[in-house]
Image (tube, rainbow, N blue to C red; front, side):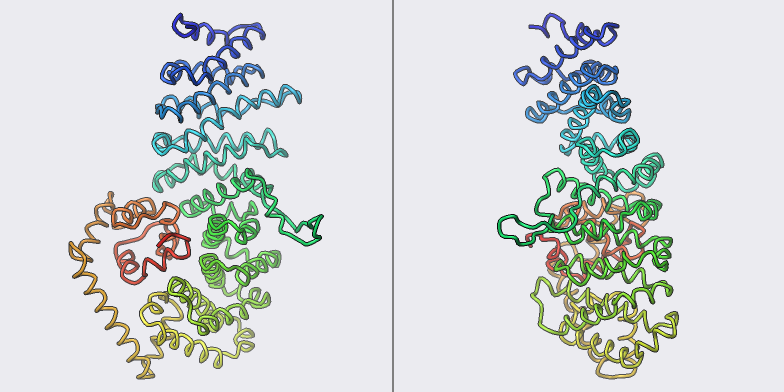
Length: 555
């Protein structure tokens, strides 16, 4: 009845009242009306009503702001229950409120009340962004991500020592919007890159507060247990959302990599690489790898101050049971040891022993079929790094300590033995770097190795022909047509979002997160794109069961 007689415009007009009591009463009336789930959401969520409530949130009155924010949150919850779709204008109003922050710090009691209104709006947007259609509308506006990052930065300035639910809602929403953004839109959004760089310290501070330190002693049994077992749900969500979106940012935005390193993300991400949560540890390890692709970051590891980070990397490599994390650490170390100045530091930290153990482990017990390809990939990555120590750019004293001839002979023999045992799978796991080059050079000297490579090539060709004949549409030609369909700008390359859509259309129902991991495996130079030859080589050589095994996907 209140809505029918036109009471809402009158209540919204109270925002302009000079008397604080009138403003508060108007906001309280709106909260009670808009939060009623018995009233259809279509009768409540008009653009005029949303705009009026947003104006109330920013009115400067603590109680009025909190009541208006609660009204917006009530409508967001009802929208989800009744599947009501907010328009782009509705969401734009909400984003503008969030970007302007929670207002200036007031007295302790008033400040807490004033922050409630802003927090309610943040929570409302995070709930709405969980819906795919709403998230698509949000990402259609290229300024949305920049507005959210700006709001997080200003929130950090206003409350530099406090971590609250506001930070969680900010990072949750940024994660949802950032994962839905197209790569090209993100790369070309200079405003978003600027505010991301500015807010990195706040993101790091929030993540650091969610990472457990040390061990706890059980009062009953007296036994030690990891502090991770005592994490609160919001701390677990903070870890998951932050590692996921930072993985995406560092993958797409090369200018941010060195800034993230300077903010201190490397050490924290290495700690999270040992997390019990599979997505957290794999995303965290990927973040470390993407940071290592920056030349300035690689150069930093030649300084003595990075010894602690080196020790952390080797600890993760030696103790993790996750094949994908182990492989990512090896790729990171391969990237860092390409700089001759870094070889000495990692040698003194004990890297060589771990690498030899990795290659020897692959030569030992035969792994399960699902773990065969990741195991081969790790072994050949380790051998590539060992070959780096025997290269022309390696320091002479290291070559001498290494015993170049003995180690080179052992490595070449190990690579050939893996090829003899596992054939095409082992060859597919070899990158086009030192290990493959060493085997190719050896094949010119030893007929046995030459014959082995010819046999593998013959089997590979037979498998390719079988695949072409068994697939409707003609195998490689069909794949090329599919690739060109997703290459919308005809540049000859596709990005991670396009690869995700392509794989799903080809029948492999991976998630966007898993598609990004596959993309990082194909994208050797870290450019964020792949061409048709890289895609075809990966498709024909890497068994899908082994590619997805490390991601804990139901094969």
